[in-house]
Image (cartoon, rainbow, N blue to C red; front, side, top):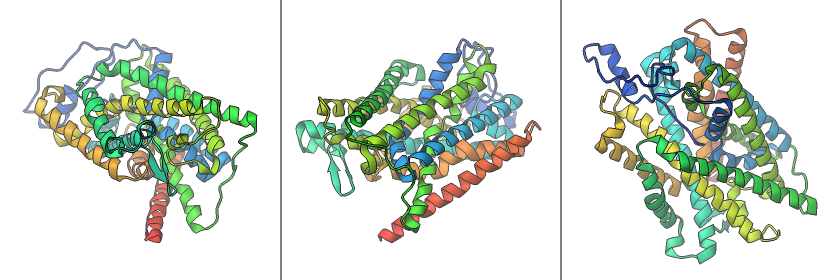
Length: 461
């Protein structure tokens, strides 16, 4: 998922040229805001409707799309589609709450809204959740990149990666070696940029590659259906015991993670000529993403059926029995692998800023201008993510962990808690009902998902 995080506390939408260069060390209550003031970005207010829809949609669609066919396999096609649409509707509601309470508190970031409602402690907890979520997402990105390049093991079999398929098994085609090469020669140069605007061209290319993946997969599935090689997949879940029943709940964190974009909404709103359009923009974006997710889940499950893997890209190492099949398979996998390489620094950018805000909340020197701080945080985070990608077995495990903890907190629990706390007295009865529904779904499903994982671990041992 691509994520743009803005850590500023005051509105500057209509005064883009205004900057704050002085500090007031004698006013102690203001010292907590020094970090946010010095790292604020100012917007020109020239953004339009379609550009905002495009930006928010690309923020939403990320690595989570790879696990959706597997979620459809667990739930069955009909419940899977229903859940994708339901989560989209609830996500839209939670974003609308954050926007509305943001206007009331005059906060220009998600953390600002939470800080206005729950104080500095609440803001810190949210930032910690963002760090956990983004670290988990980047680990997933690297796992998928590793699967694409060097292959993966699933269901007792090895699924060949693109580079491994081209050159055979060599020491330099192993997962560790290829991820190390990618980190040093692809990701490191992109991570060295200190301004997000420097990545605008690689971001545009990544969007094109993601769309290419969806279109090609849909085309292959339609061709196979026309040939009679595949049919309509299982419509309902296959429950054969207690373990399979509880495993259904593990799909909820995966679906929630696929829609997380809450920390991007204020920066996008601040760019608009007419901020009143933001509600329509969110609705259009969620509808578009839900359509893409339903298409991916449907065609992925149709194409691979019960053999659908947690990372559907790994399924493309098999012979699809279509003209130029091997070339098409490699194009599909490499297109999305390169897409994730290009999206990686954008997600990392927000992660780096939030972690720096947690570690150095009172530092008045902007992060981008402090070379030692910039280098140490970047290297430390990248080393941790690299190790996680080499030792976490699959993206399903990573999605379940981050989805059941940080993602549900960011997407549902914090927005619902803000509406229930209602510091400005603007919450409606419908807000209250929706908030309790979001909390109930988030807590119950996450608890069930974590319990299912623990049950599987103990049963295996």
